[in-house]
Length: 335
Image (cartoon, rainbow, N blue to C red; front, side, top):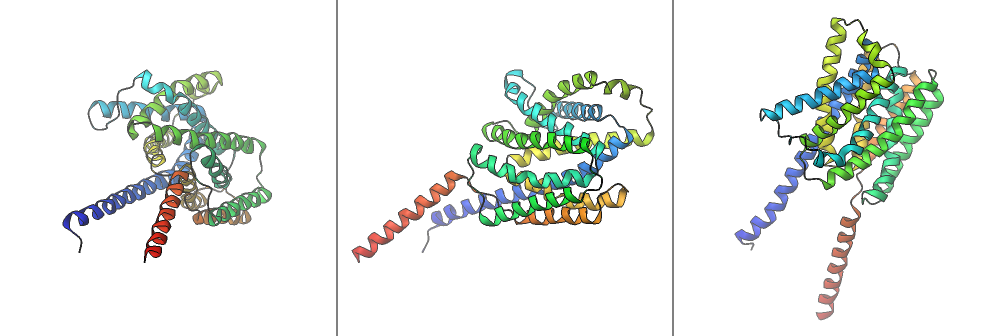
């Protein structure tokens, strides 16, 4: 018969496990919803306001200002900006900025499906980086099979892409490299820091905004943006994209702290099913039937991925099992 203390001890880990699972589930849902809609919002934004770097700069500044002001009034809990604490995140901000800018430029030249199908293949690379840089074990056979089918679907899409454009695929390649670095490096920083999610989002956007502004002046887009004739539709879409950018910044940073880098990228890919459906309803410029079939192969194959455990956890589990075998063998011998 178990004592009250024993029951309390066993209930505590179970409660903590449920709380962690609930938090992770909410984090995945929040990121999936915002990520699935962000592509459509940005596609609309660059259509009504065709100045990608200026649009991105507006989103970064808006996120920084909103977090800073609301934290000042006590609504959010971001810590004040301090250079000594923010400096380690400068590389994070540059990687984040590169991925965002390449994302927007890809959408400027290509349809949404082209971007999504290449995003589908990113987990294959990130799973390798997870193993060598973030202490994860190799994925199991089911996960490798899932990632292999995703890669095959991506290749199928490229072969059937009737709207192939060098500019689009060039920006996809830039995004691919930036996003892989972004996923792994930010995860490494998030795991080591004691800063909360809003502070991380605040620092990341505050560091990226000045760099993006300087870039808009160098590439000449700022001049074009200043001469842009604003319409109510353009103002509305850009405003929505800024609000969506704020939510996306929090949701992505929150989920990075809860799951592995590969799981993060797989989640961002799987939620794009809703994006594809909305895109097909809104735009004439979308993939062919064969291209959509290849895309859905990628999306559904990704559902078979299972997060690889930490190598330290695997080693601890093996040591525990070995100890239990030794104890069992000793007890058997004594009998």
